[in-house]
Length: 316
Image 1 (cartoon, rainbow, N blue to C red):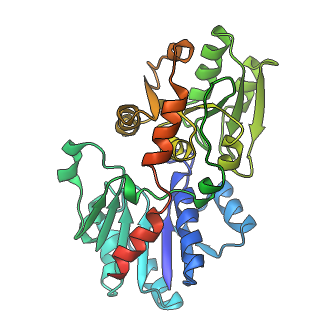
Image 2: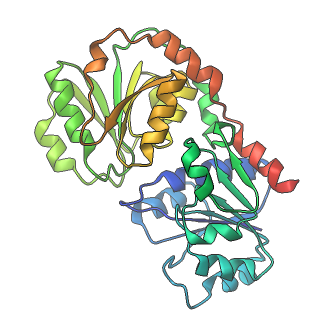
């Protein structure tokens, strides 16, 4: 039995949950048994329920009761996957004392040192490599877990008339609001996608006009992307998914760590990095973006086969 222990919240966003869903699709294809362990979060819990995925709510800040051992014994867990950004060493000690194989993703916490495999695909800055702990480290975009659904919607774009804005499921800092204001000044039209944890609905309603279409809790962001030519996104996993499908992005970093992602995709030539959340510039949208070239670069360089590669490494 495999456990996927993840954290989802307004502050940390829903990226860990969405990656877990991509891993789950691979596990289901491999016919592996699994259980999701997650904090109490209404939006995330509802998504799991709607998809019929078994999960248990856990207190991720409880380092004394040893709930990890109880669940390992209850479910006969022999592999534990953490996707929580910063796992604590007290937690991972509880897991590994049970002779369970430990896998972690993009883990900046003290607990990563005990990981048998640390998947740090988005470790795109050489200066950060010395800070990554784990017995075996997998790095590079070939280990970036993306939604296989992307393969159904790949196409080359050759214009940027249709714009879509998506700044994450929660958009912690309300960057969407400023993007709308900027696009209004540039006299652009766009669709705006907001997620279940978006906390700025009233402010957004007050500034949008008939040039903007609001889309709430879309069933599939990948499918939604298929109808657009250019996306304005954050610097998390979304621009990689968009670029893999042939959709170029203008990337805004909402968190410091997203700057590396934005500059990487900018250097690759699949997107344009516009800056940090308090100093980004969208004026480039009126420049001669070479959309067709950007679209082709993304499709050629970003794969959807990472989950399979990771489990092969785990099985080795």
